[in-house]
Every structure is written in C-alpha cells, then in structure tokens.
Image 1 (cartoon, helix red, strand yellow):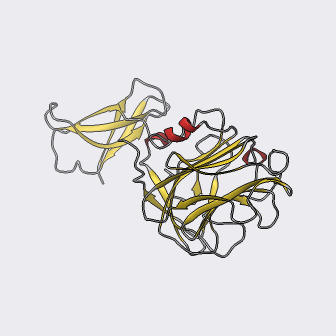
Image 2 (image 1 turned 180 degrees about the horizontal axis):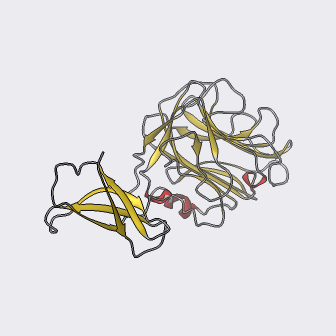
Image 3 (image 1 turned 120 degrees about the horizontal axis):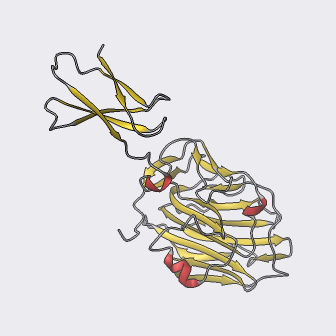
Amino acid sequence: VGFTVALYWPGRPGDRCRVQASLDLVRWESIGEAEADYRGLVVFTDTRSPGLSHRFYRATAAPPLPTSRDRLPGALRFHGRGDFVRVAHSPELNPYPFTLAFWVRTTDTGGEARGLVSKYADTTLNGYALFLSEGRIRGWYFAQPGRGIWDGALGLDSGFVANGTWQHVALVVDDRGGRLFLNGSLRSSLAWSGAPGAPGTTVPLQFGRYSEYLAWLAGDMDDIAIWNRALRPEEVAGLMVRPPSPADASLVGYWSLDDGAGEVAIDDAGAPHDGVLINGPAWVESDVPYPR
C-alpha cells in the first residue's frame, strides 16, 4: 500500500538517489533511497503517503556508501576459550627484514603461552611468534634450526604488560638481530645465532593463539601489521599516534580490525591475507589511545 512515483534523474543509470517529500515545496523530508534505472528514472513507493494530500517528491544525490576508512574504529576481543584468527600461509608473510606491530590490552597472567601473533609450529625453530606468558610478552624469530633470534628460553621480554590498559608492541628484525619495543621504547634485544634470513615455515599466521596450544588469549587486539622492512625507532614511535597507512608499499599485511561484523578480518593492505575468525572472537569498538 502506498503511492508510487517515477522521478526523472539527470545522472547515470545505477546512481544511488535520495528521495525526498514535501507538502509545501519549502520543507523537504528524506523518506528513502533508490537507484536510477536504465531509463533515467528513480521509481519509489511512498508507503506513508495515504492521507497526505498535495505531496510533492524530488530525487537528490545520495551520499556515497561508507568505505573501509569510514568504518568506526574497531578491535577484536578474545575470550580465552578457543577463539582466535587464522590467516592462510603465504610466502609474503615470512618477510626478512621484518617488522610486526599491534596493540594489545589484557589482564591475562597465565603461565602457558597465549599467542598474540604467531606463525610458528612449536619446537620447529622455523618461523616467528610473540606470545603472552605470566603477563609478559615473549617471543622469537627463526630462519631455520640453528639460525635464529632466541635466548634458549622464552626469548625477547617486554616486561609486565597485563595491567588492563592498551599497550603498543613492535618486533623489528634485521641483520643486527631482533628488537622488541613497548609503547615506543626499546625493552629487549637479541643478536642472531647463525646467519640471518627469512623463515621457511608454511604454517598459518594466527592471532590470539600460539601454535596448536590449548591455551588462548583473553584480551583485546587492534591494528595488527607486518612490514617487509625494519622500521626505524622513530617510525615505531609514530605508530603510537597514528595507525599504519595501507598505502605503504612495504606493508605486506594490515588488519585494522575495523570490520565490525562478520567472520572475516579483512587485510586492509589490499593483499589476499584475510583472516578467518574461529570460535567467535567478538567485534568491539576500539578505544586505542590515538590522539583524537
């Protein structure tokens, strides 16, 4: 039930148009949207028109649909109950030189490794991982057995981070070794043992889980990014005040986690490295402390 109107549209077929109505040709009310058809007409049914006499209509240009950059800032919440994100293996995700950066917020102080970002199968000595253990971020980077950045134990050490506030983490790897930054400051470094080089692992990249462990992260993550170069200290510090730019040619994967819904974490760097949400990590609004 309603009144159907056909409005001439001077633009192109397929254009999105906003339909407006008025009783006096002075005050106009937006009542819906439609597309211009192949004839250049916008056809719209006003279901609220019965009882309204002398109602006038017009079509105006509709605002563009939101793009990924228009999305509300988002993050992923992991509950520590088997939920994580899996990104299929790709050689581009084994870069050298290498930088990995992300935000994390947690109060999880469990002892068994809770993966943050991991592309590593336990005991293989091939790949890389940053994980949470007893409230501290630990980790390593291996080209292959005998060639890695490792101390023989839990590796690089951020110090205690599980205080319930957002922490910015960055791991930078080049021929000098590995350096772990927390909130823009260097916290830990290790030299290479053996020749530097890229990993050869083919396991998936995971967020919120380490290897195949049955322990998962309880906490929030945001703005996960991987570069195929070693970021300079001032660039690492710059990530504290602004997110990575998807236009950076050295960015091989960037998961802004602004998707807000669905079962896929889109790779905003434009590469085919989308992540699949497993067992229900939750989309939440982000309050990462970027200057507003």
